[in-house]
Image (cartoon, rainbow, N blue to C red; front, side, top):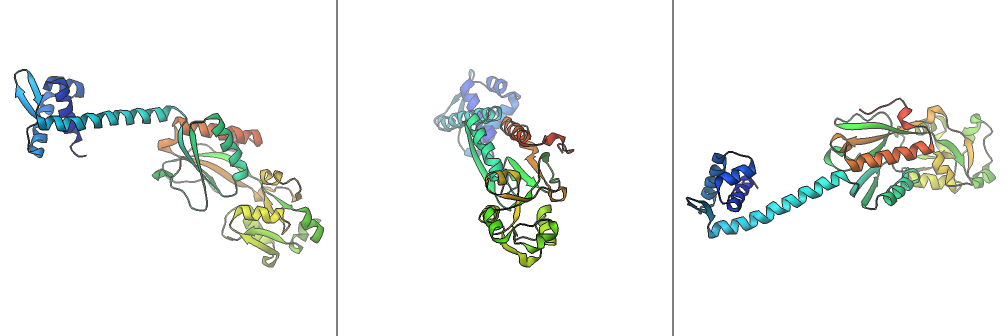
Length: 302
């Protein structure tokens, strides 16, 4: 709507009845008001106002235009009010994108957050694709690996994933268990099929375990978890994943070289909104309840 300023000017001239009154409402010089009216009439090819000593009176064509202008101006005012309201409360849609496989950690938090803020509609998107925060594809991203360095993003430390090696009792009944790391190569494992996956524990497994001993491979983290639970082989699980299956046996506890950092990423334009700040505070509080304080990990907002 290239000429909306002119239409809005005409609307206020009709409402106030004078150029000076419209100029005061709009906060512009009276010459600007006259210029807008003249330009709009020239563009439409009709007279919108009758000029007289007491001011301006809308013509029939002017009345038609101004009814539309009044409705549009009111709709813009309502929209502005809704937008301002959304900035000050915790409601509407909240989009979180995360690594696949974090469901057991994230979903309880989302359920509790939704219970605390019933006006929220949650969208939880997972997968390998990097959702673009600068295009509004998500409000909050949970990412792994080195510190994300995309421009215009705010990055905060979340938690450190410290997976251990686990096996099901059914696996132990069939194959026994390794007494020490030197016996790992004699056992069967499950692993991410993507050998380029940069997770330290994944890199360690593919470098340490003979390929022929990795008998179940998938890029689906839920499938890998279920393969371990069903006794297909030994594999990596985070503590919260293992806790969901009390019958699992820990083969080796977490090692520093297996750890992977998780980061909370938001776009600078949305970072300070009430909705995003409330969710980030809630999420980090839940993380602190489950382990070390993420704020003490040595990283900071960037």
